[in-house]
Structures are given as C-alpha cells and as structure tokens.
Amino acid sequence: MSKQARRETAREFLEGLSTDELKYIAAYFGARTLDPKLSNQAATRGTRACEIQHYERIRGRKVVQASPHGGTRTATKPTSAVSHKMIVLLEFLTVSERTSSSAKSWPAAAGSA
Image (cartoon, rainbow, N blue to C red; front, side, top):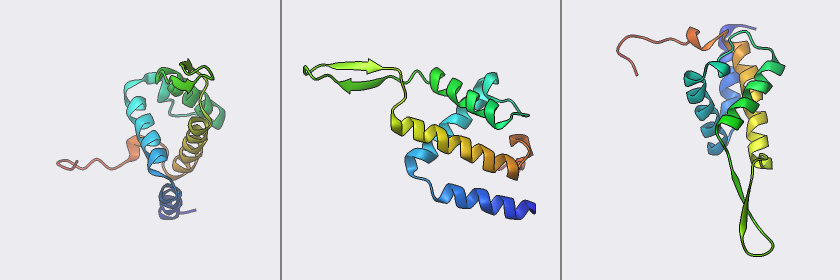
C-alpha cells in the first residue's frame, strides 16, 4: 500500500469520528508529548493498549454517578463511553502507525504552525 493510500485510510477513519472521539485522541497526543511512558515508538498493539490504560489512569478520571438515595458517588472504572473512546484511540493508533512509522515523520516546515 502506498504512503498516499495509507494517509487516505487514516483520513477516512478520522472523518467517521464524533467530536468527543476526536478530542479524546487529541488529548492523548498532548499527554503523549509530556509523558515518556506514552511515547513508545516501537510499540505492539498490546503495548499500545497498556499505554492507553496508563493514559486513562493519569487523566484521573472520576465518574460521578447518582446514588439511589439522592447523593452522588465517584467511581474510577471507565464508563462505557470512555471505554469506547479507548478502543477508538487504539484503532486510530493502529491505522496511523501503518501510515507513518512515528510522529517525528510528520512534516514540520519552518514558520508553519
């Protein structure tokens, strides 16, 4: 598969995502920039899954749930929506890593943002 065809595949994948899913992927890449545990360049799919679980833990996500007695409680287990986003992120990383060997191959022309 050519480089252009792989880019198109990744683009088509992203075009099918919701705004929340895109934000989750963007937040992951932001965290990946800051946390060396998330930037394993030669990762397998299983290693990437562990990185995503680590990412979710460091996000410190607390899910507020309504109590049957009128109060609220917090839970640390990801909701089904977060679990879904974790799966989408893993699939995106799989697709994008077939497209590009690493983020450092992305063009960074001088003077462009």
